[in-house]
Each structure stands twice: as C-alpha cells, then as structure tokens.
Image 1 (cartoon, one colour):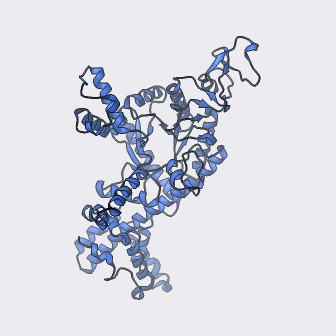
Image 2 (cartoon, rainbow, N blue to C red):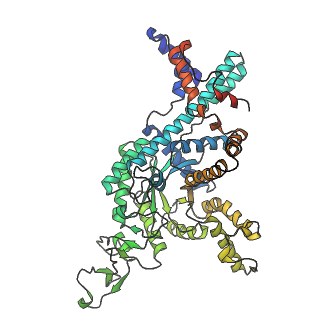
Image 3 (cartoon, one colour):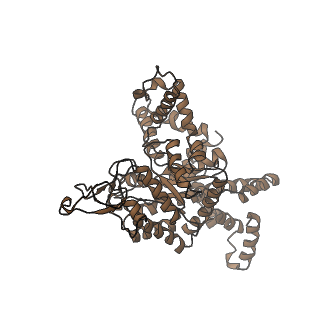
Length: 532
C-alpha cells in the first residue's frame, strides 16, 4: 500500500479508538514500512519466488546469472547488500551465501574448527536468522533517512521535494535477498536433515545446499579423504528437505544437490541393488576390486559384489572404507547429478579442484544430454590459487598453439615478475571473464565465493595492525580507514546511526512526544561527519 494511503487508513482506524489519540498515523505508517517482513517464513516465501524467477530468466538468457558472497555475521551480510545498492542501485541477481566452513571456523562454541560438521548444527539456522535481522535493520535504517528527509521537506513547505521522497519510499527496494544456505551433509540421518532444514527455513532460508558425503566422515570440499554415500541415502535427504519446504508452505523452495565425487575416492557403503542397471548397481560399478576366479580367492571378512556379470572382491582399506576406481570421478559426477535432478533437486553443485571452464562444461554437457535445463551453483573458492591456475591455463593454451614461451617458467608463474607480462595480463582477463564465460558455456547459474570476508577481515586487520602498532600510529586508522570511509561514502563512518541510534531517537519521539530524551543532539560527535 502506498505510504499516503497507509496514513489515510490508519487515520480512520485511530479515530475509531479515541483512547489512541496520542498515536499519530504517520508514526505507525513509518514503522510498518520499516518492518515489511514479520517472520522468517515470510522471507523464505518471498526470496524463493525471486530465485525461481532468476532461474527461469537464466534459462532464457545465460548472461542473467546470479552471484553471492559468503557471510559469517549479520553485519557483514548487511554491509554487502548496502554496498550493492550503493554501487548498482539494485540488489537484483545478488544473493548472500552461508558457508558451513565459516560457521565451523568462526561461529562454534568449541572455537575454530575444520569443515567437518563438528560445530553445533543450530549455529547454521541461528546465522540465517541473524543475517535477516541485520538485513531488515538495513531496510529500517535506509527508510528512516527517507522519512527524516520527508519530514524536513514538509516543514520547509517544499511540496515537490516531499513528493519526490514519498515516491522513493513507495518504490523502496528491500535489502532482503535469497540466501543459499549450506546444510553440509545433513548433520546425521534423513530425520536429522529434515529437522535442521525446518529450522533453517523457519529462519528464512529459501535455498538449501546438501552434499553427498557421509555425514560423520564429512570433509571440506577441497581437502582429501572425502567419502560419498550411495544415491539412495542422498536422495532420501533431498526428499527430507523438500518435505520440510512443503510442510512449511514454501512451495518454491530450492534444493542444491552438491556432489563431491570428483575428488572423493572412497565410499563407506556398497549400495543396495535390486536389478542390473539401477542406481545401486551403477554406483557399485565404480568400486575398485579384484575379479574372483574361485572361492579360494575369498578371505574371512571379504565382501563380494557382481560387476558386469563377474564376481568382484572390492578393495577395502584398513578403515573399512571401499575404494573407487582410479579416474572414475567425472563419470560418477555425471551419474550423481542426473540422479539428483531426476529425484527432486533443482540445482547442482560440482566441487572441482580448479576453476576451469572447459572441465566444468565437459561434465555439464553430458548431464544436459539427459536433463537439458541442468544448472549449477559454483564455488569460486579461495582454496584455488586463481592467479596460478589461470596463468597455467594461458601457458598451456599458448603451448598448444605453438607460441614461443621462452620468457616464462611454468613452475614459477606465481612470481610477481609476471604481473605486467603479456601472459599475466591475459590470465587476469580470463579471470575477470570466468563468471561470464562459464555462465554461457558451462551452465553456471549462480557464482559464489564461500569465504571472502574471512580473508578480507584478516587482510584489513593485518594492514591496520602493521601501521597502528608501528610508526604510523593513529594515522594508520585515520588515513587507512576513516578518511577512506568519508571519501568513499561508507555509511559506517557514522557508526551510531548505522547501529540504529537515529531510529531509536525517532521511536522515543513516537512514544513520549516532546518529553523524549534523544541521543542525537548537538553534543553528539556524529555531527562531525555531516556534510563532509
């Protein structure tokens, strides 16, 4: 409802209740506008529709891919979206990512943990709720400034300005965006996955990412020792997440099925199979083993399976895990992805060991032979050495073309000596175009960086500490932080306002009228940043 219409409706309501005469309709209209979303489920339903529309637009035009950055705190997510609106005037096709890695490393009561699902599972849903609390506050903060400007224009009798601001209020774009939320391997069996998925959806999640690793052996996607589960177990968890969405009325909820099979050489179980060629039989066909010629080849405790009409003794490690055949990763990825899409998943995530458009496209093209509209969420991971990877890709491409590479040493391409070289500049160009190229050629609908603020926080802190505790002293903060905030228009320079001081002052006036004791008077040092 437009702001003016809201005021008219509230004016009628308040007049019907004489004891409410201290309440001004304008105040209620302002507070309603600043609190558009009442529950996490409201948010989940709203953002799920956005994501579904974005997926449909990408199917029509691959240049319409989406992006996100990982967050480990509500304030980080809030500032990302404020920055996006500041620089691009819209949050369209920009999301947030909630990384299980960062929850483990930064949010667990046990202290920093590796990405092995050892952290408290409710920390994930708690972070989703926190992120949306901060995003809702960003709405309130931005609208509060508009309402203050409107009040000033009305007091000055500037009707044209007041009308312009009112239009901005009516057309205000929320900071609430979809969050792609990492549920790891489900933190247990399918029931545990369902229960946590409900918590995440109730907190506002419209998109849940689930991986096909064993939950109690789960590893970071870019570390060794990964163990996958047979499809039946993984698909039961996909069903659990879908039922959680449907139970809570989020019918457009999105499930991202992640496969770690490219880098996972182990399985904990031999799949149940009922007939040749079913999913269980396909899964077992990739298990490495020795053909059995006679019963004498079978030792105590050995397991025997049938592969391509022959009896095979799977190779089992001392840990009890079974080993997959060398070089079978890509075939298993394709099988995983097709099975997931045919059994309830909406998007895919293929965890790779490097950012290579050709490698990703090779797998996606095979998947699309069966599921033509298959689309990916892709991890633009800080675990990759992007500089080295793309310089090596350029080097290899030039070598294939027969170009003279005498000035380059492939083993030392990370050297700063190559930063301004022809090879270095072309590699940077390939890096800049990676998202565009892979969205077009490799079916990547959503690009994300899992851990960006983990690294930016460390880098900026290192720079500040080096100067502040060194010879620069206070100038390290003033020149390196505050002056840049002022020059670049970063809202946090007025940190009291960013934390809600002005909103609180306005509420005091709403509640107590002229008796309100406000914090934003002439002695508030925040005034030093006005009109600078």
